[in-house]
Image (cartoon, rainbow, N blue to C red; front, side):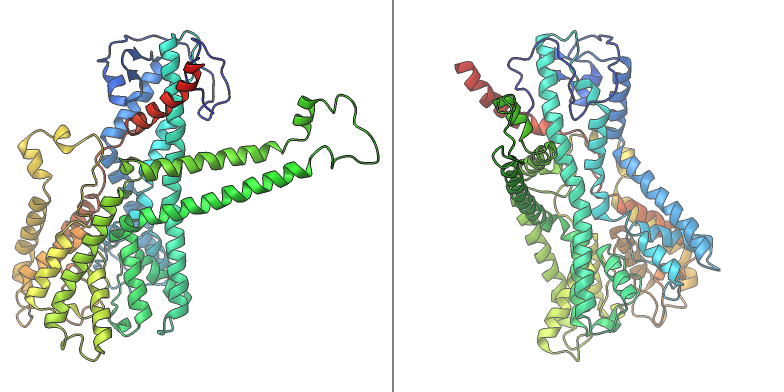
Length: 580
């Protein structure tokens, strides 16, 4: 247990704390003005009227943290571009006769989890196909959602020296360090739980879906096809047509479930998933406590007598017996670790600001709203199937299966290129509804819940214009029309959709990361695959921009979210001691 801080002396003895390591640098006190910008910006060091002094090294660390808080979006962009470069080089090596532009486009589409393709990937060799599907993982929404808690762990590790007891601390400074050390410990385990949850969710959901798809499908899918289909569906990046599986209820249902659980329904089920993790941890904690109790009873003084020898007087001493026959220390360490994890789950699940711990963890009311919105949008997209396609693309199925297939298609079409019915058979009104659904945000609620907003970073109206998604989408569409209209006009004379409709659909699909495309009949590539290199680069830029629209614009350590809870705990701990 961390000390409550009531009887904290002015100087501390350096003990083995979770955030310790290394020698303490000599102190160089700084001005203690509350207006010191490093202290105010870091949310670490200032609690009126106390300001912790910093060494030069500690000031440098605070500056590094400020950089990550201000430029987290930029760091995320660099991370995505790094994987795009890896994918670009890998595809050039693995796929023969693949041009550099097409390799770059497929790499961008894969890493950003978009199903658009400029070439036919169905005939690629095994190694290239596996590599393309593995590129989906590092850019996936679920995996990248762990980056903020991982970054918080890194930041807490970097600032741990600031919270160490110092020899020349005043009582107020010693108390502040104690408070911050206790808060840092809580934040450490909360961030650890949040980061692990994303990876556990990825493994559990994909493993369960792969098992069910392998068991229930009637299309005789191979193990590799099950692996690729599940992974592509989970990352909303289905490159291959799915019309051939429309009559397979297991494939349509599980692919739709994977598309939803990998993105749009992820924040809806995350709270429930963390509750299941919490219950599992509670069971493990209970079993560990029972095991520890059994070990303790097995090592009792009465049972340890052997060969008729009596214990010496020193062994019967209470203190010595407690040391000799207590359970092994590793059990106490395990129980303490489980207690910390249990407290971390309680912290995250009961917090009024759950987004501080995980970017896709919302309050219960917000989670319910997201679930309702997801169902409403799915029904909105299913209505055109019932009104216009009941005897059209759905012809030949029984009426219950028509409803089932239309709901699966509606749930998957927003942000995944899973099309179980021919997209070219849609009416103009149906295409308009699909465009509207793709343009709507996947999460109809603000995800930028950190202290930093765009208006604090960009002040001028010109920059606001350049950061407008409508401006860039319109610009991309206009550039494609100017570049392709003269050459495409002849090819589209006998088509139901003109070049403006196809271009607008392609741009919105790329921005949403959906991957649907109004391609030409009998074509195995997206519409962008029929355009020149300039248009492919435009769509690649739109995909990159759309991938970052759900990234928080800033990040902090989260001390402010714990402050009120810690104050209440601190007061409760101080009350008994003050009464005595």
